[in-house]
Length: 282
Image (cartoon, rainbow, N blue to C red; front, side):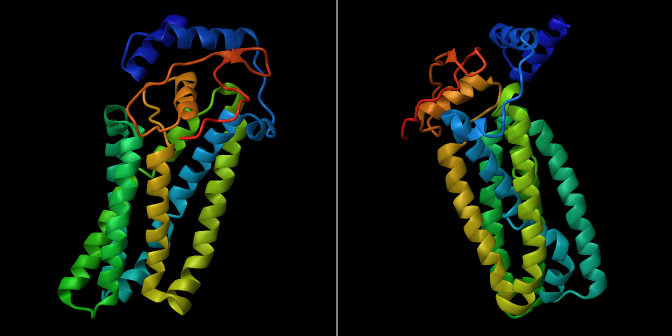
């Protein structure tokens, strides 16, 4: 079994030096490692910081405006000047675009890395949302109708590049087996709560209050999430949890450097870079 594990890890990590990671898995299995309590996520400094990263990545998926576009795309296209039949066909195009780009991103994430894909997706969504607002505000003409359609499709495409899948992948890679279950539970709770809030709140804002300006809210969120991702989200591709935590503790994750891993004992008596000391400021 462990030989197969080594082969799989070498393929996943892209390098042959996986002995330390396999040894950690063996120790974890032999000690029947228990799952951390929910409270431990907030009392362990590095894990608490990793949880913060996981939470805002989940929010970047839902507060990007993607569900507003998916849920109410027909109404948006009607506002842009398309009739009901054209709006429904355009809506089908959005679903197809999301599916195709997400499949492509699966092959890109292990080549380019999680961080760069997420930043690319958020950046693309930011600019396409700006142009989409402009196209909805100007007087309906054939040219601007086409612009609004193209920007909406590109908005969904950039979502598939990064925010559609990357938050789930990074959330799983930020935690070892001890903390992964409670951390994933919080991530799912945050994700679906934000989904519910957007689904419930967008239509009243779009039809009764802010109208076309509603998308400026999502544009602002996208800018915030870009900055948070750029300054705080480490690259997790081909790295074990200890290496990722060492980079988080070292700060300045946007610099392409790999911090040394320092092992100490955690509350379960196992060696880990997860520690109780305050994080160093960036």
